[in-house]
Length: 253
Image (cartoon, rainbow, N blue to C red):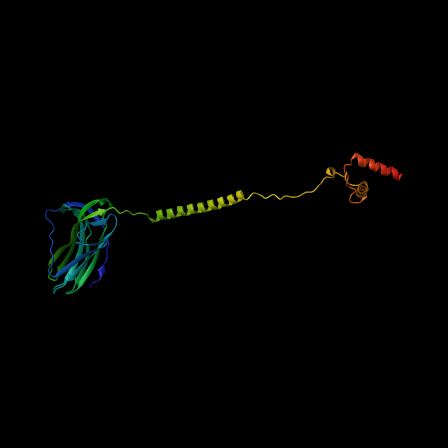
């Protein structure tokens, strides 16, 4: 089995009309097959084949030599045509030359790719893929390995990398704001629920003017007044205490 050749082709848009349908010939000593790899599609499946506009379309063309002579795979070419009239060309893609020699009993696979224009989105086209080869005697063959109507569709790209990064960044900002808001509300609620506790200080009598000394005996009151600690105490005396004090003073004289 021969190796695979990969190539990417460009195309040129042109609109031409041919009088006769292109002649398609096939050698009885050769078998061919076609496999679309991008997008994945099997020819002859019966379903409508859709090609993405603006994206490469890739396929493989296989060739098997069943005869006793060598074959030369020369070129592969593709073209878009009107679906109702395959004689009218819309766009011809580049023909890729391979010139691969296939010995009797051997196989070879070649690759081809083309890019549908974005301006074709939403329209059906006839896709023709031709394999050109010759035998050792110089007989030329041009086999249409694919000749069906396809639809060019616009692909919804969804989220690109830049948009995805923007969404991730916005989500991170929202989460950060929620965390900060939760912490702020939590600390504010604690301050509101826990008012400052005022210490209750029990104070005694700080002013001697508010003390009633009438119930204290005169002798005891005099001792308190004459003591070092009690000298500073100047209680408010009643008339009875003042009389008793004067009487004591007169007795001393």
